[in-house]
Length: 71
View 1 (tube, rainbow, N blue to C red):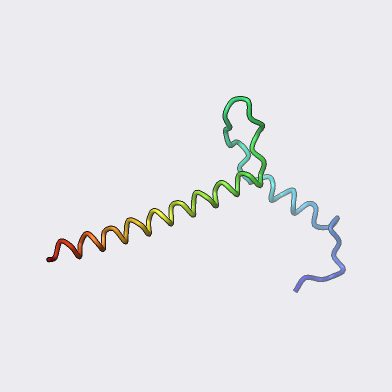
View 2 (cartoon, one colour):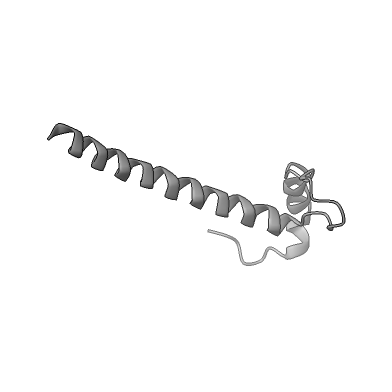
C-alpha cells in the first residue's frame, strides 16, 4: 500500500528516470511537429488493435476455407 505521506516532489526523480528510457526518436513527416509521448503510445495501441483484428479475421477465413474443402 502506498504511504499517504509521500509527496509528489519525492517521486520526481523516479518520473525522470522513467522518461529516460522511453523512445523519443520517432520520425514524422516533413513539416509536422515532433511526436509527443502520448501520441506515440496511442499509435502503438491502435496498431496492436489492428494486428489483433487482422489475426482474428484470418483465423475465421481459414476455418471457413478448411470447412468448405472437406466437403
